[in-house]
Image (cartoon, rainbow, N blue to C red; front, side, top):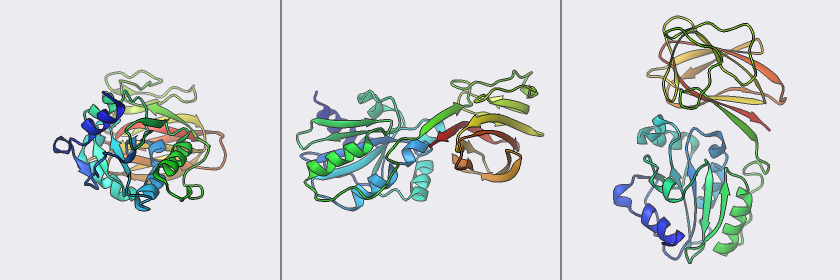
Length: 288
């Protein structure tokens, strides 16, 4: 089976798939570019503007632009959560939901975001894994589509940021101090990039959930931006003390929430005081 046949068979079986911002155009004889995408991933957010630009400018009727939303976390499987995130992010292009990783597996994909470009004959022309070389792929889109357009100035950073993920669930996460039946006491000595807990916490496969009383999370990291993937049933305010400066974020819908942004890449200390029932999935630390 050719690569194009896999695209056509796996993606156009619309009767079995949910398409947001649909319908999806017929792919036969078209230049096709699509990206595996998930809405809480920081790297994925960086390609939205350029995919919107490709889709909205209607470079040619022979070009089809869309994304496949394959979830990293369980909450991203919910169509309503994806729909709300797309509206908040002003996503214009069609998005096919792939909650069971069917399309992901057909392409043997491993990373978010990864983009694929097919010519009119259905041959795979180029791919951009983890968003790297995404500009080069889009330049090839313009050539194949016969468009005279040029990429808009600086739609995404030309050089990729270094982003480190710190997962908090039991499957991929590491907690720096052991708990006693869900009760933790943070040690005096702490290592960079390791999460430490204080108070009541429950660790599930994908997340940490704060318990009753004063639950705290402590982290030291180097970088100029820190985000946390979090959710709660009903709004809650998380108190953040970053380098002795206090702020708050309000958590509700499952999403990525920015905790910190600065120009320097220095080492920073973070202490979160988290009310009961908040689920924390991962931190993303950026170094531009």
